[in-house]
Length: 230
Image 1: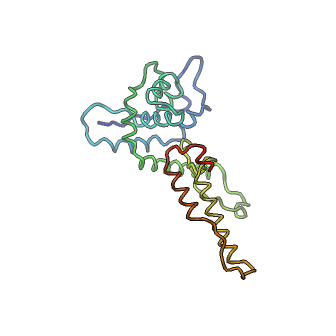
Image 2: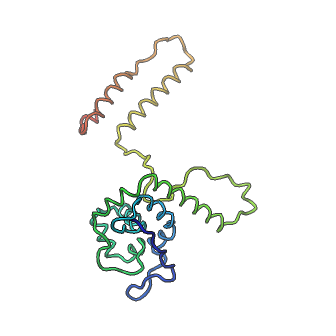
Image 3: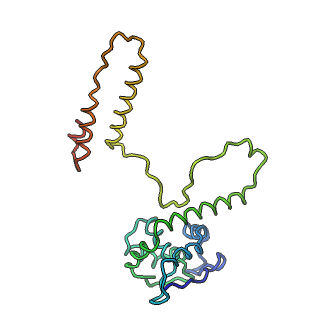
């Protein structure tokens, strides 16, 4: 069973901790203001089709705990412990007051990952992109010189917890193989554009042998430094 929860208090009514309110410029407070928690609640509630059974934890607790785990690179148990010790993390997952005890059992993290599917995360990411785009247009009115400026291209990834890893490790043998293929292509182009065409025999490049050696070494789990250097 899942029941929608009320909205959290606004920034001016942050819960008291020690000698004052929470810092509104804290990264968790700022991140909490950027996420459309109502949309998260709508997506999360689709996982519950029955009105029977124990009441599930709010969607903000589920998604917030997963974001904390990924952002801080924590285990399930450590994530729960960090939340119980940090008032900013408790505010991030939707608590109105600081609680000393653990908010939930660490085994619930497994259920959070099952209920928040990849399609839901992509939909939220798209919604975040639209919201930030609209806010940028409102804060920055178009100037007279906007028509002369080139338009930006590319795709903005709003979620800072994940980014495409397109950079290979310097010792990646795939880079060496690509360099070999590019070199072979350059040889083909230079051979066709040569001025002295008396020599009709193309120099050997041992392409089949190079390809065979590359395939043999990448099939090995741990080839070792000597094999890689040779």
